[in-house]
Length: 482
Image (cartoon, rainbow, N blue to C red; front, side, top):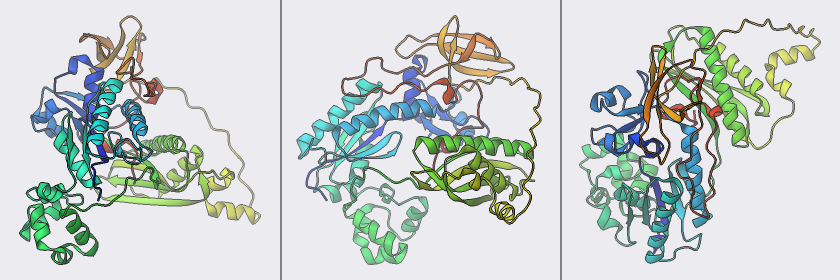
């Protein structure tokens, strides 16, 4: 434990929703909910205005609509949020070489390692300067917690929300934690909290008074000992600058169960493409291809295939995922699909064709089997693709300029034309196939960021906005471990 509050925790305030409000002047001060808009969608982030109605993250979207029927409901724009996150992380990097990102909108910083703070006054000054720089660079607010440990710094940032700074002086940990609910401690979720409540422990002071032996008896050696230390305010976990990625994966939950085998195969191929894009962006290759299938009855199956060597080749990953799909019964319907790559390496196996072939087929050919004669694919006639427009995504009109989709249906799309920093704009309606309307690019929230912060260019329309939507989006529509 440190004798000065030199560990900083930053948590951006209602990040996704706040970014949408900053980009769309007509939504400022109004309830905004970002998440999957289909029947099975869930809330990714709710603005503080929406939270007053009881809406919160991970809530089913149907329930959110009942609580706040007049809120703006938008599909996430993860490429846009990621570009803002990169700006914030670069600002953190100016403070210290030890920055530990937890997500797009949250990170720990070791101020002492950056030699920017050695005492309480220095830590507070660094925290206030960071908040000002984030506002000047991105137009968004973040809450800062400062303490002598990671656990307490995170607790402090929660106390500071929204748009504030809270500092916990070393030596006051037990007094601060004592009356708080056991749920405030890391690792205490609903199940553990209920288990402790049945044992008569509801506050942190109850845990400290129960003693380590009793907590070990209730929760096991590792969890019980760790919880006892945290209840006494002890947390010596260091800020870790980089974490080795274990896997790269993407998955989608569908608004309606998929039954058509051809459609399911097509979705797996599309997910493989997205997975490979993220794999290459991370500078990795991988040996093990993983397919995840959640069926109509919520049963979840995972299948994997390990290749001869690591790869980042789309054809290899796509074919392996397709072979894995053949071993899964999808007769009753599929509600979720995921494709991932694990066993990561920072190099790529050159023998890609060897990987693309199932091991059995390759062995047979090596033993003298006659190789198959390739057959030229028969071109299918091109079919017109109907254009879809996701609520909240960027568009540009030849005459009216930049705007965003308010909604679409019955062959029409409604667009509000406004930009960050402009007055609330006018609304116009077009045919979904209007040739003068196209997917647009996200505009920067701040035109002239502060010196020292490296602005990140807005993501292009190719990042997946406007034209071709995916299935219902939600918090698990971005990469995470399968």
